[in-house]
Image (cartoon, rainbow, N blue to C red; front, side, top):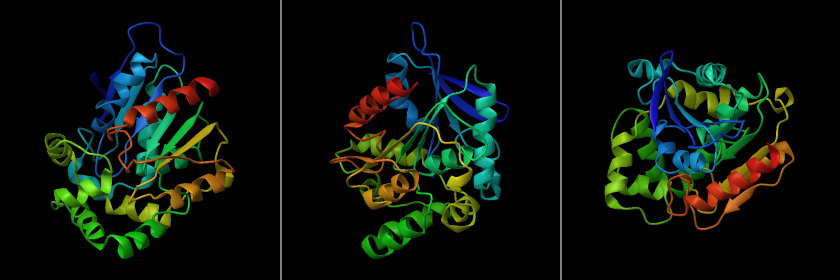
Length: 266
């Protein structure tokens, strides 16, 4: 795994040993995290499958620019980050976005095309409002913890474990994930809730795979279906999994489905 700088952006890269597929993959992370979440399993796995893999840490995240200016970043700034990285790659990549990253991918497609897009437990085009209301009634402590993390405080490990995982996760892994988590931009959260939602009529219609998890507390299957209905597609829900689909114990089943689909459309 190599770390590169695209201007002031951190980009992780993982290349296959042999000849690479002509279309690289660009992974876009969700809120409260950074590019590191993709290097745990997905990037080395997809590199072994023959894809050149890249993962960007959006502005204010990971080792990218201006962590101290996080709250100034909008959803459009995150889209600009993706465009900046795409412009520096040897070929236009397929885009893979998780949670907030899925909405960033949708907004990016308002500007330009991509060879393909995968939305994993993505914020739906209708925004975060339905998710927040659901948490308010189903998991009020989780909503409090997310708001605490949003403001730069510490969340309870048990609450976040329940939010992100349905399958068992080792204590040492959970401690590491928590140590790497971070606050999120208030401005970007409001953009995803109300102020800068995707406009499907303006989006490039590209091959799109929409995935969700049966036990996702943050983006439950009902919200994944909202996304698929907008794009006239059928969602695929993975049983027995939680929100952090790339980190769950059975992450490889998700990767296998994505690989098969990517190879069929690229």
